[in-house]
Image (cartoon, rainbow, N blue to C red):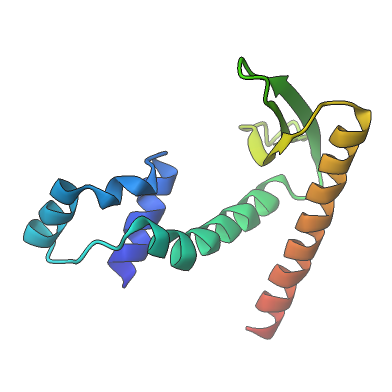
Length: 140
């Protein structure tokens, strides 16, 4: 079980699509040389990806703590799809670091209302996530 979780985390952190595990040759390789049955993409997404995502967000929260700034970046790609990204970085002279993508969302159109709603929804989601994380650690 730990192998499956670790392999899922490794694939996600290496930007490898989980659907690569559906490849017959890769499944055969894992069975022959690692002696494990590779889980399919759906199982990994359902059972492990959400937990890895939450752990990553807690890590980012701990890194940026209270001194941070956000940038909202919106772009319309060549297909006409509008995508908004909420980015965050530490705002402290001793902790200059990398920018973190906090949220990305497809918007029907980009204007002040849709971008404001995107920021509000992201803020509300992470306030709830923060509350759940704090309750989890308090009860643990």
